[in-house]
Length: 426
Image (cartoon, rainbow, N blue to C red; front, top):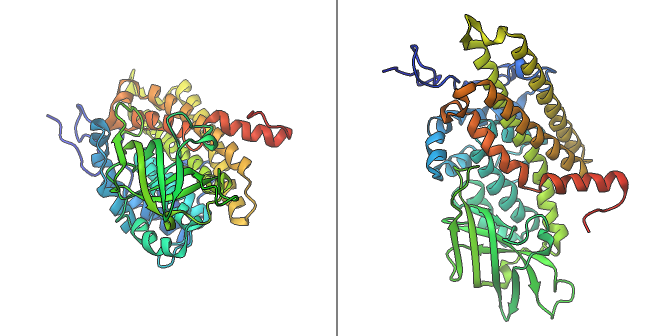
């Protein structure tokens, strides 16, 4: 039987075992965090100060994730204890200004998302749902009372929060959602269904997006607004969606809202139309591009390590011309992804980032991550389909990124509308 080095994940003698090692959890310099072999244009080698600190904290999470995530993914189990740990590490702020918590620059926000997705897509999605969507909805659109009640529990990971927009019959056309919040005296009565909702089951709070039915308010009637719904309320029923082959270590829920009653002050007061919903979605779109970059980095590094260490026909694979050409092609694609993401961070920092720019990056980076993952899987041969070698998990998980936060087609149409001046949505 072959023993395995618990630090690297590599077998210490010839035999079965992982062929890809774990990253250095103690890395504290840009060169250690992202070696130049994966940062060909040295785009991230000058990261310093608080940005570097945040990136280092995200990497330090590796020993808590990688030794167990394959088993969780295989069993489709959600390690919810990681949410509390992410809160303790203060990694849910996602660039928002929350008193008493780490304020991340756009670059640091991207690097944290990249690094967590580089570890595992489900972990990256935990932050995207809890921080990027649910917490941001409250911070951007909530009342002071709502913020006082919910921001601290959510940002610290003590309360699990969900963002419920997508419905069984309304994904890309979410503006047409059918869930209704009807005014009834001092309450809202919410009815409808939601689907693909991370943290929507066995959690604490769901931000439910519904169409307002209140004829007494001409401005709000018929518009989309957000409502803070505690998951313990009567009429809130949710079940885990089974059979997923992507992001298997986080649960998504199918939610049924059957006359759920919430007080009037449960509505997010700044959520007056779908345009306000879009403010939250736009802020997270760039994060999907960074998440795709994290998956691509992990797959490229796995392919490079395997090529350097795998001996076939008496020589390392890396000495074969066709392998070097494939690695160079992967690196070219990866570098293009890095340029997209870094430029997004620059634009956001300057306050000039436009939605169609984030859409273009989302489209390019998720397409590119799929290509790099597929190439890496092929280069690892049979080892590429084993969870212990990480690539197949990333390859499956990036399929979800390709779809969520706006499908490839919808984001491309946003870009197309921008460059032609004509909408093709309807």
